[in-house]
Length: 181
Image 1 (cartoon, rainbow, N blue to C red):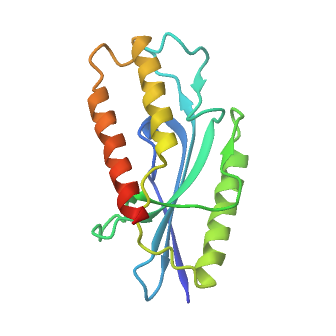
Image 2 (cartoon, rainbow, N blue to C red; image 1 turned 90 degrees about the horizontal axis):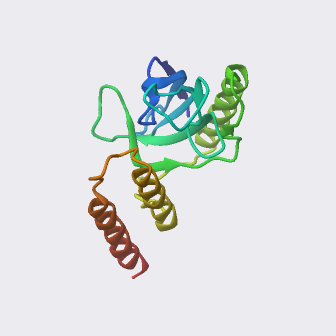
């Protein structure tokens, strides 16, 4: 089946994408099906001027990386922009991160490798079934721990809503029990 590729002018993921100088967003649509995959690469994030901890002009977008590529199914109900469904991450084998500053050329190559891999998978019949796999519990625990550290350093103020994170963790545990039946 034919794959339609559309390059789009906005970031596909990452809450601080507005501070990233590098943003790529590619929509892959398998013609004749409802399969739509968004490949998004962001990087070279400018340091927030109010950030008193990090030094330099740029900060990492994640642990040990200045650029990252992720892929997701598009939201089924979004018939206009086909933005990502954060609950349906698409995994791939290609390199997905770079830990260098000013590596836009390498980030473009990385993005293209992921796009090529996913096109090949779609053409071979991979359906990327619509199944919601909750974020790994260990990943959420790590994120909550990082938020607590950041809050202790005054990055989120004193009233960060940890109860929301704890409720999310409890919900994930109930989903895990439900899925294991």
